Image (cartoon, rainbow, N blue to C red; front, side, top):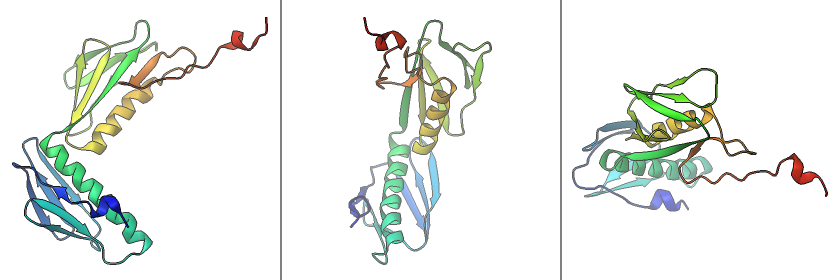
Length: 181
């Protein structure tokens, strides 16, 4: 029994949903998202609510039931509210600067690293050490944030690097902690 798949997806005012078989188009104030789903599952609009039903209780249909419900809910939230991930640059001399749509990072390498955003993703800066990744597609926003973090992951000993906002980095004790006095 999929709890997420059975959960009805409310459609806020100002959001239009077009269902054409297995293809769903969601339009809102922030943009348009299109996605094709498995044709075995049926997506029904019941007033201002979307529902996903599965034909059988087979393993594959149960898995796709929850996945389809979650993806539809993400599409509706994306076109109405949007998604945002924030990253922080921690370290002496670590900074970022805006260059058109892209961002240039100085994170301890001998060269600057240029980050070009994915389609439907906007990169912006707060100060010179906080990067905001905004967009309507949750997957694209998460992927872009992960690519930026991958440039310089947080160091386990010093904590320097690029981390998600609010991420706690557990620091390992250094070599001197292992010595007995």
